[in-house]
Length: 152
Image (cartoon, rainbow, N blue to C red; front, side, top):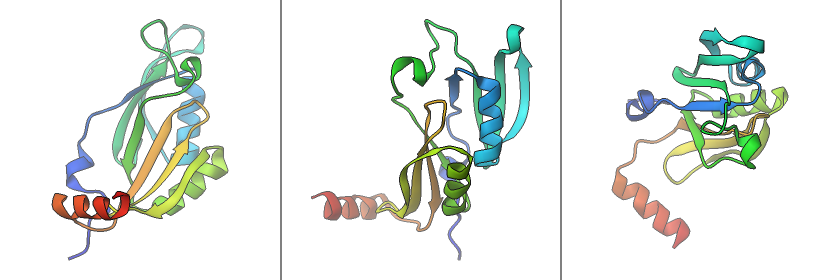
């Protein structure tokens, strides 16, 4: 039986709502880099995006223009503490596409001990994306064993 490239466990996960300086440009970038599809958008005054949703590989991401002091973009805070994980059918192809569109490749696609092939990218708006293609179905015990073997 073939392994599903997007595990059911992660298919319907927490929906991220990311704040961006330049949400309209980010929506265009995500379409070009990640193959995102704009699901809907609520525009505000001055070209701002009050709220939008895009689909990336079947996962929905909410986004809008940052409005401080509560919601600030990573570019306004010097970085981000959140990584957006999305399972895709072909992480290598997505990473290549994203880099060509202007994403920064932080970690090239590589097979990982947890049974996924991953790539890590930073978009021009400061958000870090972890794209994964699932390769093996592993028990939690096998993942833990592999982690011990790798990290000691």
